[in-house]
Image: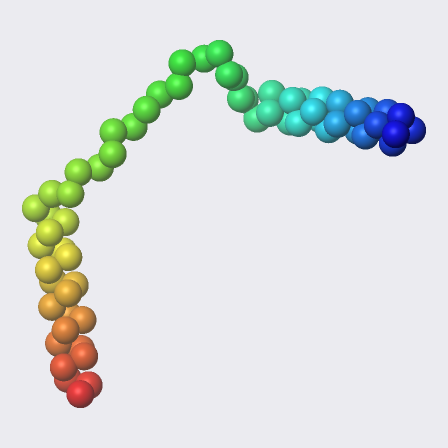
Length: 65
């Protein structure tokens, strides 16, 4: 079991080191406060666009029948 565990553990350490280096190169910082974005609200313009799209689809299907 030991001959299998040592290379496995060494491979895990090497992969973790490579991943940490790649994350640092891409600017990942775990301790920095992350910003958050408010989810977009569904407004009147969205409702009108949805209604127009639904009407267009309905007309397209009714003309094809």
